[in-house]
Image (cartoon, rainbow, N blue to C red; front, side, top):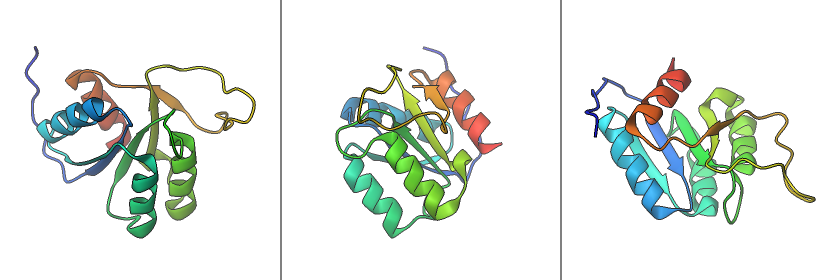
Length: 129
């Protein structure tokens, strides 16, 4: 395993993924990178938290496909509240075309889900710069 150099940051990052293990790993990696990290495995709870305190997080990273509100649904909520698309990052470990009745992805860039500390670091540097 590669050592991660902790970077100074005051960024508060929310990470939403219905895979609880992925969320715990993301929290540890983001904190090791010097960020504050809050995780949610329930996308409806995460959306409620964003609606209640939209300025509590600098960045929200969310899985695309989840039970409950999708990452795109939550990203639209964030853009509606803060009009900063860069603060709403949608990731997916499995990119597929939406089927009938699913959300249109054309107006959102979807990133590959980070799996390593280096991938999280690259994504957060891109978002936070």
